[in-house]
Image 1 (cartoon, helix red, strand yellow):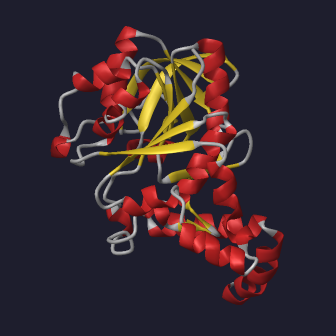
Image 2 (cartoon, rainbow, N blue to C red):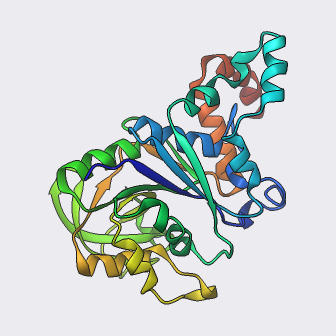
Length: 286
C-alpha cells in the first residue's frame, strides 16, 4: 500500500532550548526565513505526501496556527504589494492538508505516535520528528518512500555515527541487502561502544506499518514513565520485517542552542545573498 499520510510529533517540552522554548515552541524557532516545522512539512510534501498530522500539545498552538490562514495579515500584505513574503507557506498549503491532534500528557515519543492511530487507520505512514531537518538530496522522506515501495513494511532512516557517540542513539544491527539498505535483526537503545551491534543510528525519520500501534500499546513505560518508540519497534521486529536505509542527506538537530545556530549558519552560507553579508563578519570572528 502506498504511503499517503505523514505524522509529525511536535509535543515535547523542548527543555534543551530553555528559556527560549518556554513560550515559543522549539519547532517554531527559525532557520533563516521560516520555522523549523515548515521545513519538515515541506520534506513530506516533496515526497508526495498530501495529508500531514501534527502531534501537538496545549503549549504548541503556534505550530498549529502557522499552517492556518491569517486573513488580516494577508490583506495588509496585499495592500502594500508584499504578498511574496508569505510565498513559501502559501505554496505549501496548496500541496498539503495539515491536521493537528494533542498529546495531553508528555509520555514519550511512542505515546506521541500512538495519538495518530485513528487518523492513520490501517495504512503505513511516514513519521518525521519535528525538531530535525535535513539538507541535501535525496531527502530522507523520499528515500524512505522509495524503499517502502520496494521492500514494504516498516523502514527506518539510519545515519552512521562515530563509535564514541553510539551511546547517544538507538542503534540497529542487521544484514546489508542492497547498497545502503539493511534488513534489521536488532535495535538497542543507547548501547555502549563495546556492546553496540553497529554504528548505524536511528535518524528521526520512519515509515511505520499500522501494526506499530498495537506494539506501542504492549510497550511498558520506561524511565520517567515514558513509552519509547524504539522499545515498540523491537516488538514490531518480532512480528514483521523492518528495513533500514542509510540516509544520503545531512541531519540537523535544532533541539539545542549550538546545533540550532550551526544549522542557521549552514543554511545561510548556501544562500548567495546571505553568504555575501556573512563573509565579512565571519572573517572578523576568525
